[in-house]
Image 1 (cartoon, rainbow, N blue to C red):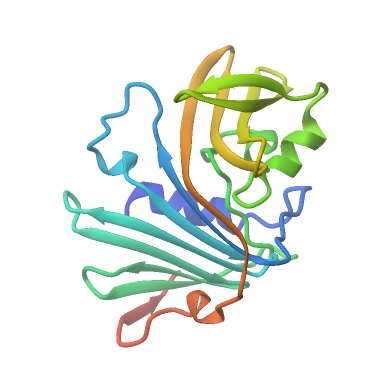
Image 2 (cartoon, rainbow, N blue to C red):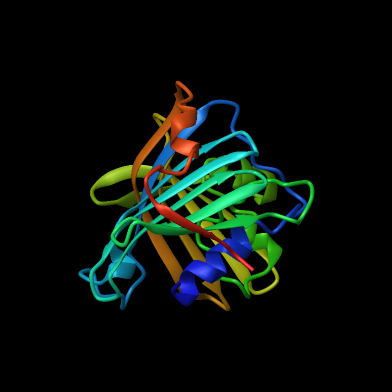
Length: 213
């Protein structure tokens, strides 16, 4: 597996981070990494699709990574997690040992980022920044649209969430460290209150799985 996949496993099964994101209804979120300097044609800049339901279920669909021969899929039904390569039709099964067995899906965090950043999760972005922000949202203009921006800070880190005030759905998010942009993502799709489909949180059959050590 790529190092990035290993990091994702550690983040997504990291136990209780002190904040619990557990959407009551199934959500579907599609994001794209648009960090300045990142090649827009690279694998890292391709869209990722997230599904999540409650604290138990999660799914992440990646675009094909042709350079490494991987088409990644992550399926989580806590405490079980499957890392799958759809191209090779193989996968690994992990068991989360970090009670209370909550699925975590950080929006922008890396493995070394503080809990303040890791707890900013897909499906609960607006609630999180509202809790952490000390000021009301400010009007901003992006792509010719009038939007609203929430800012939350802790130490040298700053989270900026831009939302559509009409729908209250995220439009873009930024992590800054020491005033410099570390990560910037655009939201391509954000659906909430979907009818649960538990088949999404079941690993595909007819693949070869091994147990992770």
